[in-house]
Structure formats: C-alpha cells, structure tokens
Length: 272
Image (cartoon, rainbow, N blue to C red; front, top):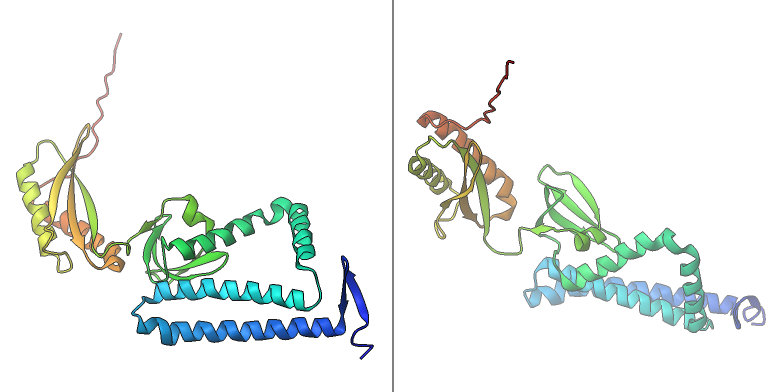
C-alpha cells in the first residue's frame, strides 16, 4: 500500500500517486459510460416520445454530453488529489503562453456551442453557404459537415456561421424562388408576364397557394429586368426547380419570338 501512495510527482502543492492516477482513470471511464448511455437513452427513448425533431434532439444531447464530460473530468481531477484551482491557474497560463496559436480553435469551439444553444442551423437543415447548397449532416465541437446535392462533403468551421450570412432554406416551411429574366424594351411586357406566370403555374412542385407572381424589378440601360416568383415546400429541390424554370423560360421565349436583350454600344469616330 505504501507503493500505491508513494508520490510520483507534484502539481503545485498537490501530490500525484499511483492510486490517484487509477482513481482518475476509473472516474473518466465511468463518465464516458454515463455520457454514451445517456446520449443513447435521450436520442432513442426520451426525445422520440416527446416528438422532438432529430436535429434539435442531437443538439440537446450533445450539449449534455459536453457538460457531463467536463463535470466528470473536474471530479476525476479532484479525486486524484489535484487542486482544481491550481489546474485552472495553470490552464490560464498555458492559454496565454500559446496565445494566437489556438485562438482559431477556441473561436470555432465556442461558435459550435453557440450553434447548439441558439440553433440557427441544426442537423437535417438545407442551407446555402458560399453559393453551395447542402444538408447539415453533423455539428461537432470545431466544425460542421454539409453534404451537397452532388454527394460532396463540405467541412465548414463553426465560426463562419456566426461571422457570415448563411441562408437556411429549412427555417420556414415554404420558401420562395426568384428567377430573374431580362427582356428588351421593345418586347410586349404583358405577353412576357403571361408566359412567365404560365411556366410558374405549370411546374408540378410549385405551390398553387400562394400563387406565382411576376414583378418588374429594374430598368436597365438596354433591358427590363422581370422576376418570376414562385413558392415551394421542398427546400432540397430549390436548385433543381430553379433550373427547370430557367430552361422552360429560355425555350418558351424562343418559341414565342421574344429575344433576350444584348448590350449595345455606340462608337463615334471623329475624323478631323
């Protein structure tokens, strides 16, 4: 027993023995078991019973997981005979020493915690980031994984979601698609509007209520910009539906004799 209690090294005024190391490892092991068991119980048994969506359920369970791991670690340190205040003081000194080297990591970790609490995005959401459309697969401590429609996995640092504008197309049940179209000034605007509305109403995935609409949004130098606005309830089909509408507009305008305007430049040659 004297060997088990023999001091191996010291942390501040606290002595670390073989027995204290064993106690530390046992508590960490038990903490991990509790964390994994509670996560399974919440996601498989409790949350489904309260009809909580999978994305929100995973956010809640991950937050609890972090808290349990942190609490277990602190209890293990204390049980090992190490003064926790000394550990914090040493950790603070370490953070200052490392400085900017871990600033980005800490920023992403804190951003991940904020994402889990505020839930501007959650697992299963269909979002747009840097002009890429995809589904949120997982939100981890440092980064978020997004699977695009082309089955490409994008790993985005969590801080990016708080620093830049991210479009969450799953935030609302119904979303709008804007399809801009430039028509020339000599076009029959009412006829062009009629064609756009017909195309919007004909698409099988465009909602009938609210109905599609057409607006004039800009008067350019050589064109009039019109916008076909349609509402859908399938966010993941956003890109496909917009492409369908754009192709239909091109084909229908060509068949009806409507020409898309091209920029015209007047060159004046001054001969002296």
